[in-house]
Image 1 (cartoon, rainbow, N blue to C red):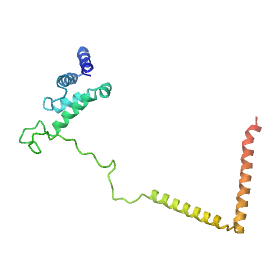
Image 2 (image 1 turned 135 degrees about the vertical axis):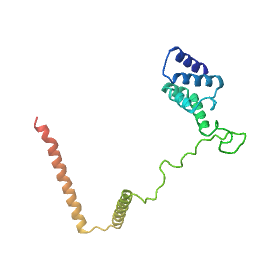
Image 3 (image 1 turned 180 degrees about the vertical axis):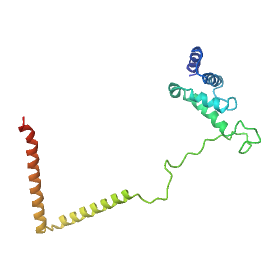
Image 4 (image 1 turned 90 degrees about the horizontal axis):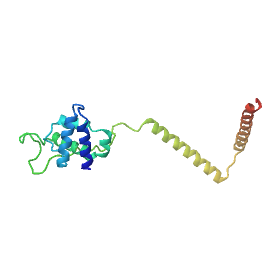
Length: 178
């Protein structure tokens, strides 16, 4: 892994004059190659940010440990690791007080809003459909069959027959025009 990083740094150095941030990038990369980490106080935050921006897509994919080392250094600087001893926040213990910020508990924060109207409407429709199906099941189970129900079944069956006949006539119409 380090051999690959070293060859990438060598290739970058041999390409000649590059962008202005390239020398900062190579300096940060050289320190990372030597120590395996990046001391947060060795570079300024703009230099670390510039080195982080200089990592291309290939480097981000295959050298994530280098990107993570830069991020760790930036996080340590933001936590005050390089501040004078009297201005550092937190307890003065031997351990590092660098910690990542807490993750949010939810992607969307809770609100005081009630249930949305479309959800209420869908619930009402589902309840009505369930009641109608339950009533139908009860009617079928008891065998109740009023005369008007028989007439309605016959009317709907006749309408379905006529619509299917009209549709088949419509489907045959383009074939008869050929």
